Image (cartoon, rainbow, N blue to C red; front, side, top):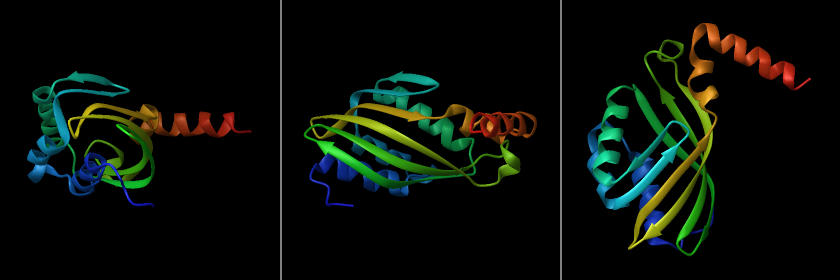
Length: 145
């Protein structure tokens, strides 16, 4: 990957590259106090709500790490393609899983003011459940024929 020119994006990469249960306080270095965070299941407004969301999320998982695969930056906006490797005790008996996704970021005052994640929620959750996983994988394979 090319060198990151936006210092806020570089900080985002550094924090997400090592984010875990014990260092969630680093999120305040990345996110603006008026941040809006969206993903397929949530819309969160304000840093306090986002911090609580991450705290609950990381208390319920075994592990989670992000690998940045590519990105495009343009001034105060960036798109990041990533792979999340995670383990949840109730999905596939805690086996590590991978999920591909993309994030749109907008920056203000050298912090993230807008964060929107795009990923397949079915792949993340439902494919990890014993009964639903087999059915969804079967349907996906049939769609490709």
